[in-house]
Image (cartoon, rainbow, N blue to C red; front, side):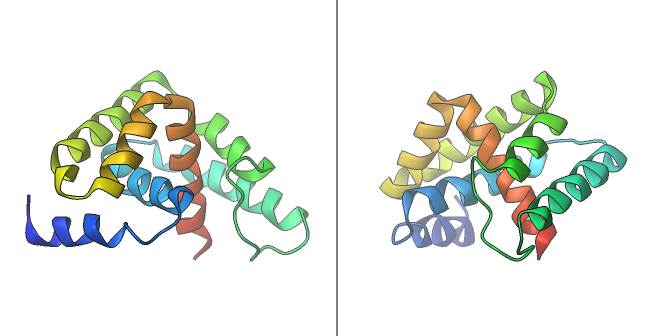
Length: 128
């Protein structure tokens, strides 16, 4: 494990479990290959749903309309397999961080939660 990855994994410990899951999926999802045009359109629609709720800068809700719509728009068996592969790779590296390992194991055990967290991470990144 590289020192920077190990440090990053260790930095997850003080976070709330929901934040840890989101960050783990953001990292694990780096290898998910999405069609750029489809992803851009899906993100735009999700951002509009977020804005339609009142404040476009409010916190992203894991099971809110915007994240759920984005997760549905981007969901393919191949993309889910790629996310799972990223989570497995991270699990192999997370042994030194019990908090990170717990988040990875939870996400591997619940693929629907993992996909929802991945979509939320995309929306958060897109909204910044």
